[in-house]
Image 1 (cartoon, rainbow, N blue to C red):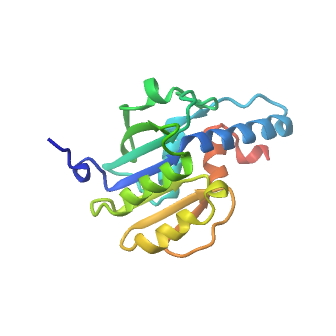
Image 2: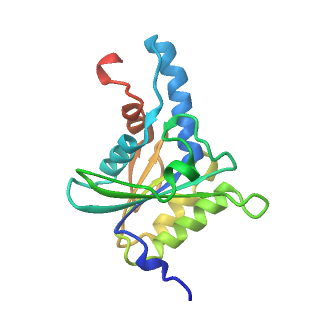
Length: 194
């Protein structure tokens, strides 16, 4: 019997290119270790998800938040803890003052698709799901080009959409935040150190 995916979605969904977020966290770690002259610990995944959710307009309460992680062939993410997408993240959940986060992790099917197409197709499913009200995106905007912003403009009506990227995004129909701020917080980099 076919499963109705619309019943599995929360009102709030985070769609994360986890390989990209890990690369940005690595770049920040290298740069800030030099600048601050101290070791930067791995990013606390739960703390980072809280920051991403807050950037996406989720306020404290009994929210259901679904975090979908897409990753490439390397299932171990080097700059986050926990770090194993299959063992430590997929199918796990945690609850805090923002609500309950349920996490799913999906690898790119090598030889069938690439991360860009996988992310775009997953986003298309989310945008077409009427149950979802709030979508928070962490795409590799530099690699994907304007495809995410174009799709959000075309199909995102009636939803609150936030894009977290390292560079400002051009387009309408979405809010945007700088990805580096949430990662810096999760990496334990304090504002008073800068």
